[in-house]
Length: 456
Image (cartoon, rainbow, N blue to C red; front, side, top):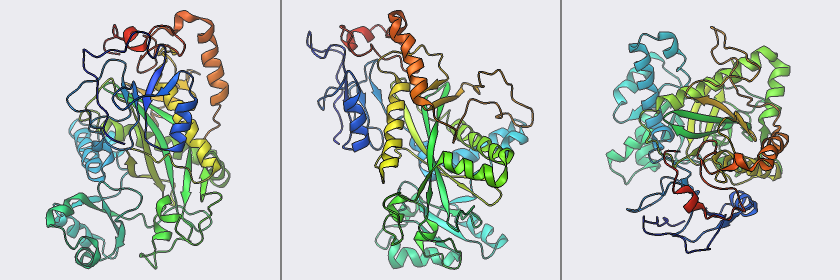
């Protein structure tokens, strides 16, 4: 979609226009459009006039204008510090070194959830040293800023990198372009179910980096390969890459179900096979992955009260049930592969809108909104049962329920019913994260009411 034009300080709605509505702009994605069109009080805005903007990738072209207080955009300006593979690893390494320098080796050790990674060609000499220490190991080459499995291949010889570049990878580009690639040690012992490799897609919503405020969605899914895993043929992408864009072209791909499991099903499977304690430890360690990775970029991300971002975390488990962070997606796909997938993504989008709260229905004290649980609010958020974290595992009582029952419909009814019956709780300054306007149906235009707000 083209870059939107941003209104300037002298531009206001005409008297009586768009009273009590939220004007949105979004790309042509069915799940996204369906949710926005059906949301009470929301309507599609013109290119130059909007209150809520959802763009697919990157910070949209906003020109020289500025965002008024009530406007919301679905990306932080330099979100790539977390979502580009090379910058993600750079920030994680820096964060770990800083913890070591601060005298917290135990905290630094908890950041060891990403595979050994090098940027090429800048760190080629370090890659050579690591190759000599572990001869015969398998590595994976990835473009730093591409998605859907594009440009990825496995290799076991350093010569393979040169052969790939001149034989079919990037034969007509200069050497500087290789800077956008990373070489990462391949997880050679992934956890398999039915002999097939899988990874996890988890949704994390960030509404502020300073202070850090992050929400974890209860639902997600495991994406399975259509071919049984084997290291005997590292050129078989169907066995090694779980990206849907790759797998859906496999002859054995299940188009009816999409080769996916809901996270609830995976958690039940792991609990049955390994016991409740092992499953709990795994999901607790995944909480650590989300928080530490966000903390690693907390001081470099440009925080903006107008911004929020839904991140798609990709996690792989090894045979020891250790979670490994593979990448973080800036715009997790909302395109559905089956009916179940469509329903999940519609729920995610709807609950993102509930947390962002353009209608101003929430108080700001909620720890659950729909399927999202507030896991970090300038510090860990503990469960309401009053449990405190143990010294051995500081995340054991945090307010996270990944892979657990999603009671979003019941919770939303309870959450919004008392607010609806008490209009004094629904003013424009009572939003959860972005206090951003009146509920649909208010008589006062959204911009006028929000003009008095500052620093939401």
